[in-house]
Length: 167
Length: 264
Image (cartoon, rainbow over all chains, first blue to last red; front, side, top):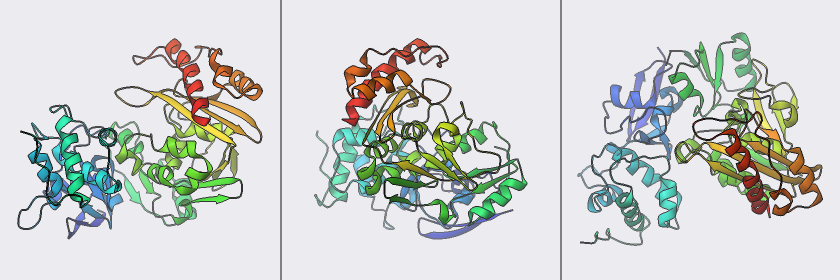
């Protein structure tokens, strides 16, 4: 069987895979990183979004072998070793940007890529457009958009700490 | 998905060798269309040839009056490219509206054009700008390249290498998307070029096609008013649960007006 070597959340792994093995299958079933979810498996819902070499991709629509040699970051790779959450995770918690939580790993990964690609900040409209590839069936997106708007200020260094959600 | 052998050649010659030797081998670039098709078992390739390691297929550059885009250029790269934005802003705008962020981070222009999905965006720009499709064997004019639903002039084993876009005087694109799938219901690409005006419809029919009546009208007068009264025939257009052929025909006129407005 072919072998794939890739770095996931800073750790290099080598695994035997089939040609048809998807990156998400390698992450969840071989590396047991089950924070990345499979929602639709048809590249529409975005629950499986991870970063491959710094860009958000749907890990259900890329072969594991296509990620050979890549740097992959999953939701498990965001928090610091001491457990301190990434500003985006913190914002999702503060702004109650989730209900069932199934879409959340993909939402957070997409949101971080989106913020990083917009160093000048995004309007609410731009955030909503940027989330086109992520579906949430609980929240109506409203608090997700608020969380991302708050997190971008921290990620871009415009605020030292997350703005608290309104009472 | 059925299993397959995986190859990752580093030259066009090596890729073509594998693809020519095996009629059931399929090239893959971004895989944003091929992988969903394989999951549905619409396709059963014996082997998949990953083109992403082939440097000859990469790059975006301007050669005088022509913009040359390598087959492996991702939608996000075309969308953000300063060369594309300066030479053909309508093309950069189009690339930024394909699929979603994650699809644009993987999908490529070569894959989209070679696949020729009737609801794809790029084929309308390729035909609308009178581009030339360059393969490992020959150069194919856009007018000869697109041959109907998912069908092109590419022969088995022939690889799309790059697309050469003549830089137009002005160009514009407008589309109406299905609100759920976001695929094109009807789109129109208009261009004023040194060799004349071209108007191309995508999404509405089984493949991209030129709208001769609108081309004539815009040649006489480049304005929204020139196309406003032209009705597209519904004959042969797609009708499905998302919209009838008559609805799509109506959209063609509306999108043509918006495309002219976008072109300025």
